[in-house]
Length: 137
Picture 1: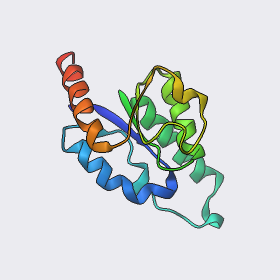
Picture 2: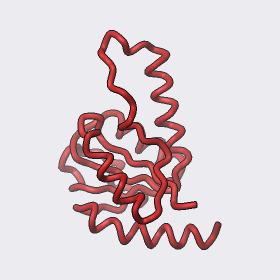
Picture 3: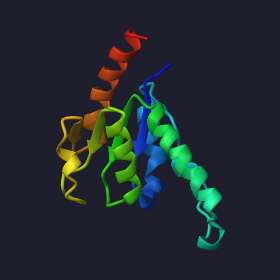
């Protein structure tokens, strides 16, 4: 099985996620939860039960991952919570973007983070990590 990853990113940029996910899947990664495939529903249809289910799926996706890939393309409360879940579970985070550009999140300075300005630069790093993880499974 490939390296299990969780792609965290802003809901507003979900249209970017299929292409990004395909790049990681091409090197053998498995996305633990494709939250961007969840249908966007009107505000009036967002029941507490629906929102709770979505939150549980996101949380479970983060907790199943061995690595989080953070797309830091804009500010987002959801991805901030997902990072908190990853930090609490000691899941390393590879962040794509400029640290501090969209938020001044103090947690971005923890040693659990590795920052890069492009997905293309991150792919060989993730591939290397995947090979190490696969050798120990």
